[in-house]
Length: 438
Image 1 (cartoon, rainbow, N blue to C red):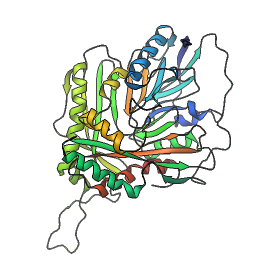
Image 2 (image 1 turned 180 degrees about the vertical axis):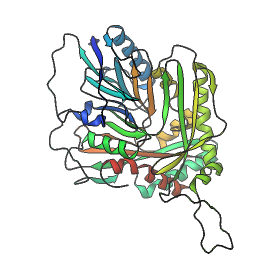
Image 3 (image 1 turned 135 degrees about the vertical axis):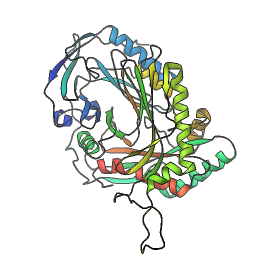
Image 4 (image 1 turned 90 degrees about the vertical axis):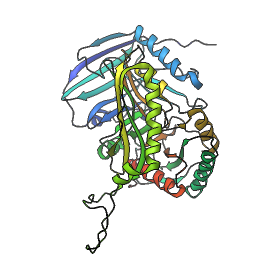
């Protein structure tokens, strides 16, 4: 058995001028598989190239997080780092994405780009990372002409056709009523096929423009715009945003009157936000998710603050029930350790989690891969951001196809047709990114 050689890295961060669009800095000849992104409202990080990656022979399964954490700790210990900026996101960084299921053959891992550019609150920087004594690698491309729009892109059903999805949901509801689980989150996939390689930067730019309030991410071909921050660890402060409970957003202005009145000629539209904050099914689903995150964070935090009531998060296509939790770190757990402790939350798996995970494997009929797993970055101190890989797609090795994913939480009160409609709404983000409209 060959033991992987641990890379010795040298990183240097320098101040740089702020940029109107971080994605403009990515060279056109960059291998799309090496593009990384973590951007929200114009701030964040993008990178390209590959200085190092956790070994492909690393164990998957339940050890996928601890193996990556151990590898990163050893890499940091042997690295030379000069950081002349000293902000979150500077110095030596690794980006990562991990499989939802320990049984997935694509277990995920960490990658270290050769170049990272970032900006936050008017300051910008560039970090160059190289392997000490390494021979420079020539840039590689995916071949062909990048597809800039919707020409030649077609959608086809994934593992379960849309017309069959309500029956899957109905089966899950029966299992809930039988007492097997209290909640299960089920997802379906759609496959986008293209005549040309799909351009990663075009997808990222479209997602960042339309869904600016989300975190636009890319790691090893997994691309999306997640509204859910699994965990942020920064200078001893822990934060997490929980989303569960969704309703489609009416893009016309919200009404000031939401009930009919006998003296008015026309019936006013109901405000979908009122449905979210009053519907028992939506509130129950959200409460499960908040409880699962609070229980996982509690051993690692002091003074964990959990709001009693959720708020409504407004995105271009949907409204979500949202709760922000925060606390003070009580141990030496890294951001990746915390992400591992939180995964899978009830928001992407169900309750109880082990029983829900078994039901997911039985009913979905597909491997989620890294969809609904942790995605984000970690620095040399262990600080970092980890979201949940939602509203996303996974590029194929050749770059000419992409699996798109969407799911929803199922409880006893769920309606199968409404759950199908919810997945279609959630697929709108990646359809937009591919130039196929909403």
